[in-house]
Image 1 (spheres, rainbow, N blue to C red):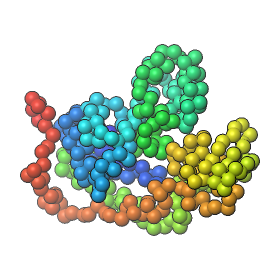
Image 2 (spheres, helix red, strand yellow):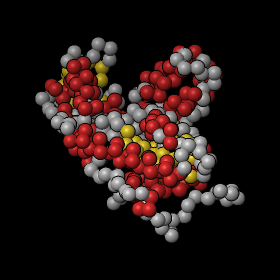
Image 3 (cartoon, rainbow, N blue to C red):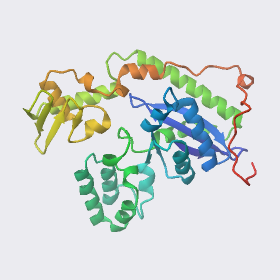
Image 4 (cartoon, rainbow, N blue to C red):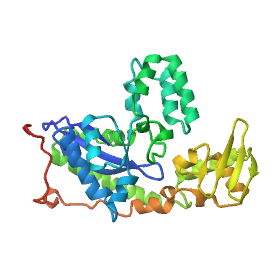
Length: 332
């Protein structure tokens, strides 16, 4: 989720929500023009997201499995707590890295922070944090004050699929950047047209995929399969294995779809060690990939379309029971 300010006569803000689908592509979900980026507008926006997109037959379950990634805009943080209290809320690592004291890009301490954020295990995380402490104690003091479960992969409370930043929302904003100076009606209509074309293209792409999983997942599986050829396996049972590599030893449990390296657990695609065990048992690796990365799921995502209109006269009227966000004591 992200917000971007408009540059036209209406000095408002465009709020957007988007997600990443199983082929590592961006899916626009919701956008809205509001008076500003504050708790009231974000609260209203998240309510529309909850009721119109996220809510399903079991809205309580949708709340618990949802993962939200954003910057640390105060109004958004408060609104997420109000509307999605059980969702996992992660902070964008890029925004955090830009807030590090005296942190130009690609310095050793800056790179250690990113490595710590990506670390899958506690041991790897602690190693990078200790190096960061040696390189830049001031930045280290800033980082350790951040709630770790909001940014560190190894202890994140939800499923983040290694998506550490809110870049997908930033990308949507960059696509429509030349529209931000237009009147609101034109801005909304042009955004709708772009989204309609996007859905059509992705739907056609999905129909042309011949693999059980998406090309993105297929590429990862192929790389893992190639690397796993050099590992040594010691089976304990039909599903439990010790996997020995040149630099480490891990334990794979095929029945639980877990590996001690935690990559499979967190990313949803079998890691190198898991692929070694799967190949040893002559099992189909596609059976161990999370459904999110299946081609069938990808196609289902784009089953619907964004319908065309003849013009704004066909836009649905706002129902009388909808309350638009209006902060108290603020003139709009």
